[in-house]
Length: 282
Ligand SMILES: Cc1ncc(COP(=O)(O)O)c(C=O)c1O
Image (cartoon, rainbow, N blue to C red; front, side):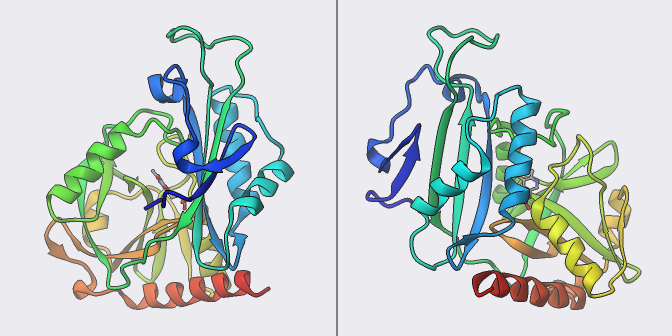
């Protein structure tokens, strides 16, 4: 995906990706000790930048890494890496840095490692995707956007192995979110999504979709969802910054909304595209 001459940011420098190197003692490499953000860019402008940087601050505070840059400094780095007006995504990662020895306890006086790259966004499947339900095997701090994604990776791979594109995570009978997305359903004419808590990532796209629904006078509800409700939903969607709103047209081998994206999805999809277009040409 990333071409050889892609320029990236690493610890204060802009350099070709092949020359960007981190020491093997970096705690991101040894422990997965860090956090990240993914921000979509339309018309050269990061979408919902303030919200993404606020969530980054929350993730950093939750794992007790002092914020290495101000919001203005982050924005200046993004401006240097965004190239042209094609749709792209910023990936940024902050780790606790490279210590001299491998020790679980925090090292003292070590600067954080800061990495940023900006790459094109992949095309989005507008005909919908297949998904499966799986038991959530993740930890109890899913509100932190941690780089430690082993459970998410294994769960997503379970979906891929079964010919599906996303795994829907279920814990104690409650439907929580996707392996890399939030979940929303349409039931009884309402858009319903699980409430924010330590069991889900507070998705920026989820919030935007709820906002767009309010502006369209479509009722929304943030409450717990059980598996039966999910399986009987009129429509199921998953949302994320780079995949926008994806309709799930098959769940656990059974068609959802007749096997095609539903009516309410079409309305929200159109509102979402208008919102992006307005961001491109304000
Ligand atoms: C576990 C998880 N939930 C939800 C999301 C969606 O968040 P956002 O809309 O901010 O991209 C993601 C995005 O990667 C994710 O990894």
